[in-house]
Image (cartoon, rainbow, N blue to C red; front, side):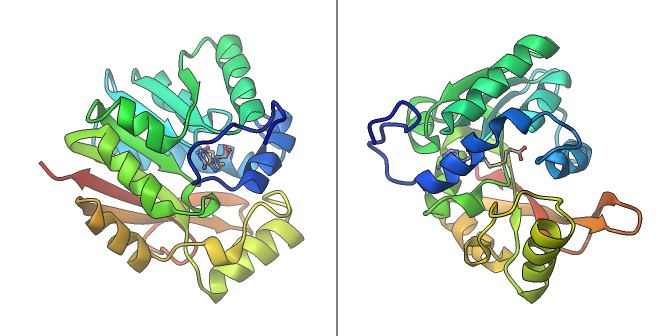
Length: 242
Ligand code: SAH
């Protein structure tokens, strides 16, 4: 790992092929009709879900696996002080440039969740980690780091993809191969995480589940929305124990 595109890692919870894939597509991140259009479309629903539990104004937030900053900027626009962290260097460059362009201030840092958590333990009111856990070798370690970043009683929000036949058909076959909603090769079905697995990992990290919601896509209306159905893409709201 010597090239400048490769993060020199003393930590091992990284799949370099995943980062390469995101880096390769980074320039299209903010194209609302481009490769990451699905993230743009689901974003308002993620904000709606978070705001059901906590106001955002003046809250200190770390957005883990922030990518190009679609969620980070939306949180900052609500008045939060947001730090966005990711290990894909070119993606972070796109995030920084977009922030300069939009004038929405986010502090972007190239640092692992584990290292950031060590340096900023218990400093955040809210931690977000969306569409990221299914891209790392050890999601438990990220969940622990997210918990460590939060203040006691702080809110932690995850989203990921459930693992079952339906999610294989919808998130891989339909979304990647038939409808081109998501770039081909973005997801590996074996790395999807069931709500039961999330529950086990979250309990180990001393997190309390407050609510969950599905993010469903209606292909006929070409629209996303929140639902109670967590079969495919889903959101979880946790609170850290006090
Ligand atoms: N959370 C953002 C982006 C999701 S895409 C959103 O939902 O809008 C997944 C992101 O996770 C990519 O930016 C990728 O670079 C990042 N990622 C993958 N593995 C990572 C790791 N080990 N550490 C930090 N970020 C990682």
